[in-house]
Length: 114
Length: 479
Image (cartoon, rainbow over all chains, first blue to last red; front, side):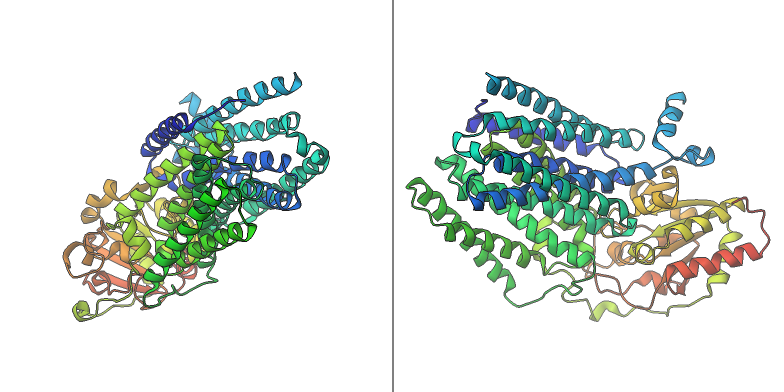
């Protein structure tokens, strides 16, 4: 089992915090909503923690709350993905519009050509 | 043996998952790579969830007899929670996106709080540091959960008026201090293992109550900042519970979102020229400026058809959309109108204020939904200089973000906020439902300007009339 003591934990937090700060700092304002819902999706990883505690549950209380944790976490992850994906699929340039390219795959190949 | 192998696999896959989540987020930084970014992050999440079930080989001996039931419950919870949310996320109208993000975010906070609750009720954590971290994550998660639900209710227009009670701030402060105090008591009692479940229960109730009371006084137009900060809160709570569970993937993903959310929140607040604490605690819009509201002139109404015709023969038009466009679901009609203008040779651009709408970038998403290419959309700094050379500025359901008082009236509550200089265009049309004031409760000198005409009505029906009028002119419109 990996053991993360307090200081290693702080190092991880510090580096991850920096990474988040820098990644988001470069994002154009036009993408702020998808980005917010995208990062909303990313913290849906909490569902894993829910599964871990639920699998370890022994009492009824633990099981009920663990169930809620997985339920809510799964909702967070699935919903976050669904709305982010929907939003991002809508962004297109005027070239795409002119060529009637709407789907993600078509757009991807189109940009490779350019 | 199998226990060790499964741990190895889980560790390796979690590492890959954390990488994929970060890489996916990184790809979301440009509109071109963004769709693949969410897909990459999605794969990371999916494998991480699947591989977590390998933990069944490593559960405590005490939990082993319950394992089949627990696995079943986990699968049911995943299916129901994931299924319902997925369906909701696919069905919801684009205009309702802010409240959807709010509710999903609340779920994440609730999940983090629940994990903490299981740890506390089951006495799984010991030692002062892990206990404090559990409790801190629980507090933040519970506040984010309850606060996000209130934010959702406000955005959904279930709660309409911000709660304004005298001394509410002091009550909230007392509530917060009490919650933290109860948390400290729990931490110390846990060390001597004489902890009553009632105390833990009380802690969560207090924390959620604080989340509710903190969010109730905040007005609807400040919701972009509020959702953004609760997003950061949930990330933080997830990261902290990740430390408690000794899971680096949770720690990394949670903290990245925490930092990203904080950054986004600060960008929002800066766009309003206000501090984050001012948004959260100031009861903004409480006392609308009255004395200096005396603006000379009057609002001049005009017919939608006349405004539409005028724009048809203009050379350049800049459109400033606001929440009113989203409320009227007018984005499709707007783009239809824009295509007509473009077909007639008019140069059309969109100007987006950073806090237009109820969520950062909400207008960009609405326009994207209608099919507007994003290279027609310009942000404040990129387009503000162009208004002076533009024939027509068409303001649709926006108010405070084009109020010149922010530029020149020092006594105005929004003084100093960067605005779109729509008033500098040669002609301004404002589509507005009525003569009401904006969210900040202040008069808008733009509406009284000599170069401004008001077009009253619901944005969608006004635009429909404009389209008819322009079509009636028999243009060479290609759209």
